[in-house]
Length: 183
Image 1: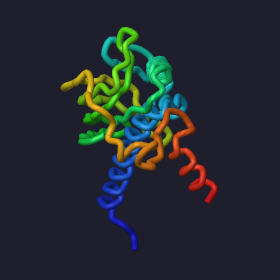
Image 2: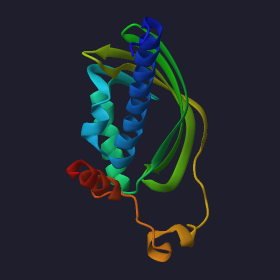
Image 3: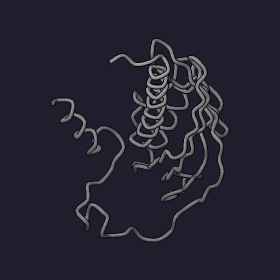
Image 4: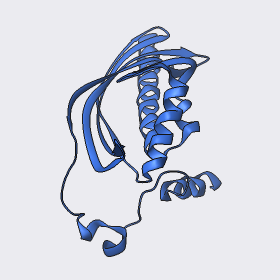
């Protein structure tokens, strides 16, 4: 059975949209795991990122965010939520909402978990069938400096038996994907 031109175009657009969604998920994973290779893979080599005071090469931003995260040594989480994708040929304009939980140091003082809710405003290009970010600008909608209170013991590694998420390839998910890749 042959598909109509309209059906083929719809399938191609759905494929593009899924590639773009996957790209955003890979970005979040790269930041949270401190995986510089994964993080830089979502940007074109000349890609730029305007992330607060930083406005420059995306690869430079990626190195900085991984170094700052490594200094804290606790994994944070980026949650990708609503997404608007406007595709025009080999260019796409994308708005992606996120919720980020960040352990961090401010003025040498450890903040257990700052929270930011915002949006990535991206221009993407498709080259040789692959979508990557050409220009990113981050919008902060609201933040909180810290979530106070003790950990919920029943959900911790020590008391609840859960695996602990960590930065780097020591995270349990890397083993999961190695097993999957090995078939």
